[in-house]
Image (cartoon, rainbow over all chains, first blue to last red; front, side, top):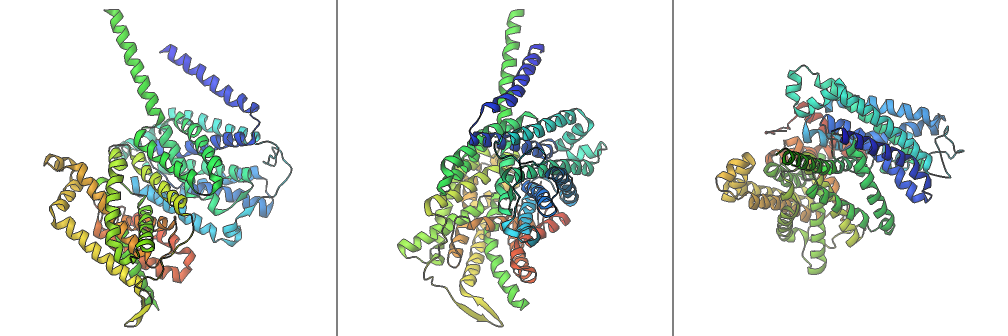
Length: 333
Length: 286
């Protein structure tokens, strides 16, 4: 067991160092773009994971929070000249509050009724923003181009600063989730996921904890929205509230495996490069072939790998452990 | 004015109802929420379009043929994909049809470009007066056709041996299998039947609606809401829910502006599902 722990620690150190150092040697802008997308979706996947993986509320409408967050900071920046970092925090707070308010009625629903309600929420938000003149309706808002720097949250010469900001977000959320896993909050979340009624019978206020989960998840997702707005320097409903964002986030969780910290990171690290590369390779033709491949890919994952990558890892671990035990038993005899 | 709008909503609701019944049937039998249902409608609309273009068949008249084709398509999809994940985890069952939908929509875009198309010279066109209200003939034909198909489905599920077996599966899969029902084969039939509903609806819609790759998405979502309104697994509930939505969409769209009509439909879903978490006529587990 000690060996396993030590190898795990070594692997973790290597992974952290690699994620910090390797990108410095990547100069191609497109490769940098992929890195940014990987960390962004890893964070989004974690936010989904808190709600879907730990509490068991499957959301396919995360784009509602994502888009709202992107609009909060962009509106404040464009109309009132408020620093995007302030907008970043406010986006988190406002979307968390929004998630809480939406959660009041919606968390009463279970299973697929909740999932469909989140889809409906995503669509409603998109329609509202498409018709809201104040925030530019269907054309959206263009963010002003200013001097690059950490204080303005804009970088033009290289995309790497965005990567490191995203990585910092990911680091913070991982630390939070490690703390959550061992705290009362995490245990309550899992109890609600495993059996709501039993959890209630044991004295857990399920409504309160579901609301906490949806508020945290929405808040983080909203901050990611601000991040993408600052990255692409424009917001429009079709882009920020796109249903494919919601599907991709859920897909990352399925592919990586839910209910653990590593799953969404693995899922994002493998899925996003594939999706961005097919888009770059074939998307420019406008024939939809890249999305065709993407759709087929989703189907294949669901049919052949429904337990996610973490399921595979766990199977291998179990097999290895069984072998070790067998070997030991053999030695004893 | 409101009578006119209500009748319009009713007609629209009947077509939604046909799509929704297929969705509800599939859900009731195998517990799959088919997010690709709208894409199936789209495929059927293209099938009608090409039948019209190359064989000169009118979409309304060719709709039985399209429904039959879609039945076969559905059986193939079931055995190739759906049947393999029925025992899989919740999330995989939920997402697989999303993937299928994205695949089909972009397949259509790849094969037939994103252009808007329309059937030329449909047989049924124009407007007639029914009492005090104007009625568009193609919509009237479509909703009558939808009701006929709905009646056929009802008869099939309630009265034929195969239909009863399908019902048995939806009540208790284990017991049905112990009674000697071939679950795999009948699930395939049920899925095919659901697709056939989408096929018939697509045929009727092709008579008067624009055809483009993304056309089915909204129909699929609205049908989903209708099914949830009626209660998952209840085909009658789906029809009632769909008619309700048709009326909400038309009357509400007139009152607050047509760009918000889908927002209104989804709000109606949220309100009703929160008041009645299992829909109007729903039963069974979550």
